[in-house]
Length: 301
Image (cartoon, rainbow, N blue to C red; front, side, top):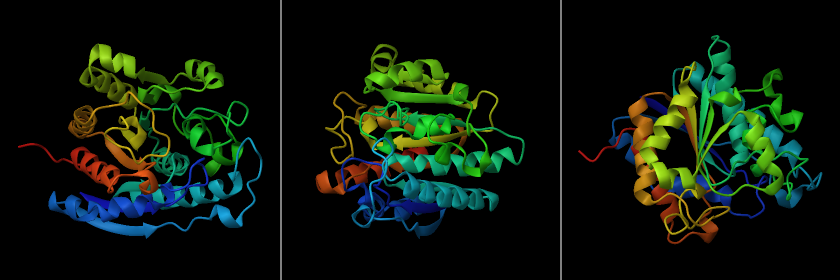
């Protein structure tokens, strides 16, 4: 298929600098060439322009840099919708996870115009379902899934003038192992299904992925895959924005991507939170490319 790659070097939503270099690190790891080797036609759209924190006021303590993040997400949403309208598959490179608000908004709006719905497969160590009222840090990269489900700052939830972008019953989180105290009740009450690392340990990754994909495709035209590289254990992916011990292994992560590919229901993908500043010889970006390859059809035989 034809794949359009868009970089969004945004780190305004994170507490640690460096993920703005993520798109460059993934491209340096030969993403374009390796996807082309699978037979895909690649269109690299470059990077969206984003504001730099050095020249900006931080703004409200409970939602830092909200106006600038909203501007970036709105611009990204338009780009995603235009890409889908051309029949091209969008692959977004972050940047921090707040960019998912824009990716999902564009995807949702495109299919809404066709009277269709989408789901979300959110592979992440974190729920990312804080709101300004619950967030202990005010960092917006801890809020994007809540925004996609209709909870959070209206500037983000109401892009294109409607909310929620995705029915929470069609959202599945895989790999969860770090939830803020005030975030727990909203996650439980939201209707989102969260598969924790305990469930993966007990049931196996394949069974969990089958259930997650079933949830994301129940009554939908497909799903968006949002892959936060911190879903993997830091031993596998040390260069991430917010590492948490006890994550997915190398093989589990590949199996997750292969299962996604087998479903033929993925309609867009993003890879976020690659931080070259704290990485080791760019190996987190190299792993990100390998995982994208598995999601896009690379097999062992």
